Length: 75
Image 1 (spheres, rainbow, N blue to C red):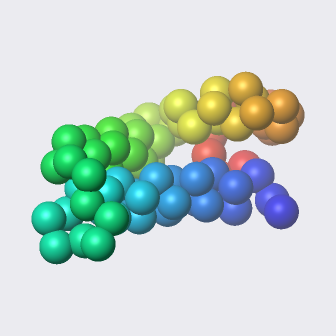
Image 2 (cartoon, one colour; image 1 turned 90 degrees about the vertical axis):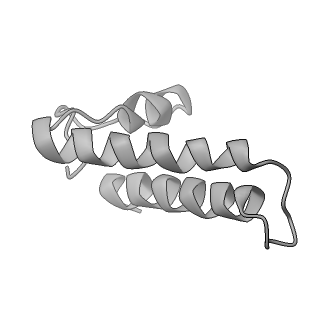
């Protein structure tokens, strides 16, 4: 799996998880505060697109996967 695919997988799963746990009509509803995770993920995606900085790279590095030299998510 390429690095950019892993970044997209993490982002997609975090958005889906927050929607499942945060929407009132969801069978897995816990609290609407889970929708803040979607907000943070979206802001991270906008930041990555505008300035090329990807904070998801640090999360992946903490998991033990060596990120590419660039801090851009598209590498």
